[in-house]
Amino acid sequence: MPPSTEEIQLSVLLVDDQESFLEQEKLYLERFKGKYEIDTVQNPKKAVEKIENNKYEVIVSDYEMPEINGLDLLEEVKTDKNSPAFIMFTGKGREEVAMEALNLGADRYLKKGGDPQAQFNVLSEAIEQEGYHKILEEEIMLHTKRYEELFNEIPVAIARVGPDVKVKEVNPQFQELFGYKEEEILEKDLDDHIVPESRQETALKYTKKCLNGERINSKALRETKTGEKKEVELVGIPVEVGGLEEIHGIYKKV
Image (cartoon, rainbow, N blue to C red; front, side, top):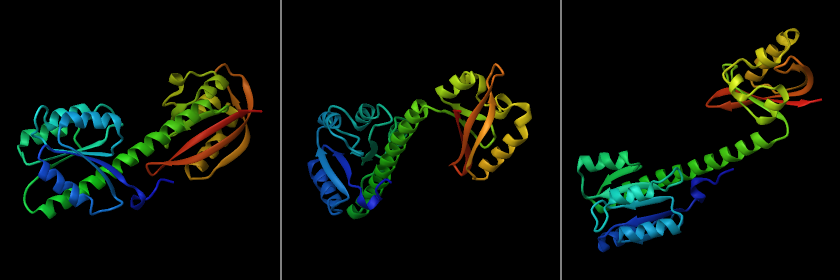
């Protein structure tokens, strides 16, 4: 189970060439002790080095800086899905800069100015939202990777069937057991391909039960692409995805 947001300490890099503003920004965020681990840098080129050598959940950067500006830094940072969240925090409020920043992958564009406490409150909320979102994304990617590894390596045949009763995915062991290449069976009715005519009614009952959230465990007769009949141990597991029930059909040759 992932930690609650209260238990997470976000690692944040603040980039701004104005030393006095950078100190004020850091001082305000440090009031929330336990929430943030703050690092700062005035030179955006040195910021690139820091990002390459450290893990940050969130980068907060000014726009107008010497040598390279905030948009240049954004392009350096946003190289892949694992890149930190990026918040452009600048006194330069030109609409074209905001649009370009968002088009380049910035997660937020915030304007400096006005009451210091109010602007830093807005910044703090943005850091939390984008930082926690980044952590959640990483958790999802990790679980997806683990699922894919398990799906492909587990020594039993598995077919993932959507709520429309069409095949969404089959693993290599399914292809070996039943003789179908994945592309031959994707978005097709699974029962039409591997259930003998005499067992269609029973198979339909199993499918309906699974789509209603009931787990199935039974011996069953199934057939390969060439028509060979095989007795298998069948496990049908309902899995909720986006509020809809999918079925993971697991087959082991008896």
